[in-house]
Amino acid sequence: MPNTFIKIASVTVGSGGASSIDFTSIPSTYTDLQILISSRSSFSTGNAWAGLKIRFNSSTSGYTDRAVAANGSSAFSFSDTYGGSFGFIGDVTMGSNTANTFGNTSIYCPSYAGSQNKSYSSDSVQENNATLAQSDLVAGLLSNTSAITSINLTLNTGNFVQYSTATLYGIKNS
Amino acid sequence: MPTTYEPIATHTTSGTVSNYTFSSIPSTYTDVIMVIADLGSDTSYKINVNGDTGTNYSSTFVYGDGSSAASGRGSNVSAAPTVGRRPGNSILQFQNYANTTTYKTFISRGNASNHLVISTVSLWRSTAAINSITVTPETGSFGSGVTFTLYGVKSA
Image 1: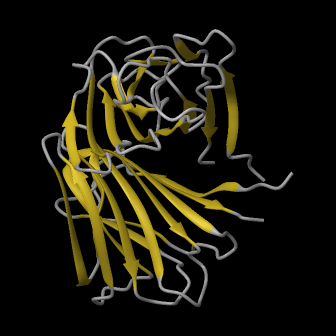
Image 2: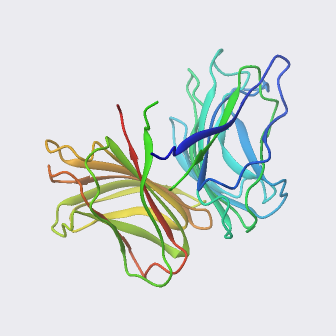
């Protein structure tokens, strides 16, 4: 019986935090990838949220994204958040939000090792016991046909705090 | 160790087809998940279950096109509309699909980064167990290189 959903690697941020979370040497033997993230940014100015970004294979261009978001007050949409240099994943909790609270993110990358441009889907929630908290649904694309062999996750403000986690799973269709 | 998440079937098109059907879906799972990787021209999909083309479907969706967010719905229609999106990927989840007691609901995400992102919840008003799912583009056809995969998820 096939073993379909397999953990490839997992990262837990230690004391002192981390500026990025990286997965490298990703094998090409799966069909799709899924990344599940629990994260919080160290940035603590204002009561907003921190943006979570992705790069595949250290590519610094070719990203497009489109998002629909809601914050408890309004729903809105935006695109190409980082001008093509990163892919937008969603928004997560930051230092000025409710204590002991981490954002929750799920990223799905189908056909990551194929020969077509690489699309991804992301659902992300910030959560914050306050007036505003943001959730995002994101469609992303890297216009690059290379197989994905590495993934770099960073925040647009601050660093990942201790206890942030990210796990990379491989999914096989046969 | 139990095997919880299994591939049921996968297919990659080698030419143009008007739709694609997963048939003979076993009833032995709790939920099924469909993943579509399709970089064809911009459109959404519609879903028919068990070959039913009666007006037994409805959907509610929210989407963003990069400028504005909007919502809409359709009811008493002959296929579940506005499910998924291309070019990009779509993920459809059919929970409790094999029960013979309740109407069937499914949720989907459509991701077309150059056009819009959409989330849809759909209803098929039938208590029959789902044994086939047909995906049809709202406009046009499926070209070559489109991959459809169906996974089964067991709760025990």
